[in-house]
Image 1 (cartoon, protein in one colour):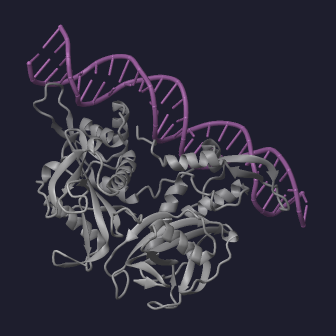
Image 2: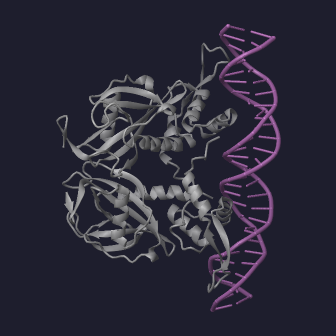
Image 3: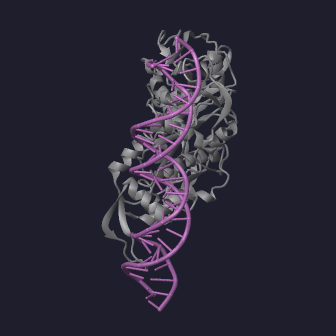
Amino acid sequence: MEYKGIEVLDSITVDCAIFGFENNELKVLLVRRNIEPQKGIWALPGGWIGVTEDVDDAAKRILEEATGVGGIFMKQVSSFGRVNRFPDKRIITIGYSALVQPQDYSLRPGQDTSDVVWQPINEVGQLTFDHNEILEAALKSLRTNARHALIGIELLPEKFTLSQLQALHEAILGVSLNKRNFRTKMNKLKVITALNEWQTEVSHRPAQLYTFDKEQYYKIVNEDYEYELIV
Amino acid sequence: MEYKGIEVLDSITVDCAIFGFENNELKVLLVRRNIEPQKGIWALPGGWIGVTEDVDDAAKRILEEATGVGGIFMKQVSSFGRVNRFPDKRIITIGYSALVQPQDYSLRPGQDTSDVVWQPINEVGQLTFDHNEILEAALKSLRTNARHALIGIELLPEKFTLSQLQALHEAILGVSLNKRNFRTKMNKLKVITALNEWQTEVSHRPAQLYTFDKEQYYKIVNEDYEYELIV
DNA sequence: ACAAAAGTGTTACTATTACACCCATGT
DNA sequence: ACATGGGTGTAATAGTAACACTTTTGT
């Protein structure tokens, strides 16, 4: 099958759940379809896979087309293969997920979309096809990571306060956490480093700024719980 | 594309990593390819997806064709989409995984395979295409479950001893565990129930038999760590 | 002085880890 | 009697959870 002059696979697509954190809210990138079927309905950004393109690369390209920025690490979530998930035609889709900082991106609709927005995760309505299901799977994987305190490096600015980090975890997990214990845990994990800098221009005691200890952070991410044995 | 008289998708396949536990060893089901390309090379059982068949159902059917028994729950592991993973043709595959008891199955080669064997996990050599990678991903997911003590109900007989259960965990995780602590943990999780029955005809103190508390077992499985929060 | 958010002390409880030891059976 | 695996007691340490309190800023 050909699409925009490129030979693509005709029964597989990629759909992306791109998460951002802004104003202490977890948001997801949605586009409004400007083509049939389901024209006008909100959807996760998605697209076809080139015949000579790795699926991981297709996911990156599709994100880039939707947001204007590339080089983001896309993680595969799962594939979705029910017969009737897409009307008229049999299409299997592979769901991908990524975490970014909305302020780094200037959104512009792609060729087949009329709008692009950062939608608060609690205000996502009915999406097209099985995209709500894909989004749920991506969220679940995000939560699994957050429970192990391995989230934030992509979603927060270089310097951040512990309250911001806690708000992020609360937004992702959808629960409220105990301040004292959250801090104890973060310190114990050694994934953050205190800077000799403080917030300014706030009408209360300024919070100390922190950065992620990238070495320790990625060390834990790559271990991937491999050594977390029972007993 | 047509295969054995059925219309199938032509650039997607399913490959299955089927695990079994026998003689205190973790094993995986391998088939020897009897068609080109890579005829004669060992592989995970796999096949095409019917145009009117859910991908999950395709996985079940393929397992059934390889082992002669159906109705097993197949869990999706991941998809594999590198351009050159399959020679000559662009094919993306979706990896599935299942756990069974080898003694329940009588193996017979399918139409495109010359042999089917239960291969000990430590004696798996070079497989065809990227099947070693698919197997690794399936194993990793299996280990993640085992670390949370959520393994065994599919791999052990109805009644089993705690030593068998421990041997299973050790085989999957590839480590040795402390007997005392293993038992304490299993009891605490309440996923097993002691029976009023003991081993017979062993030349040492007979072990007490246990069953899984299915309700508690599946309750934990379905929670899927959803409530295991940090802090 | 007060509001607001940052940040710390402490305690009770639960889980993990590591050893040492006892028990019941067949030979 | 002893070899073999089954099975338990216990104590030190580490992690979790809950709550109360102090600190520093702007208004």
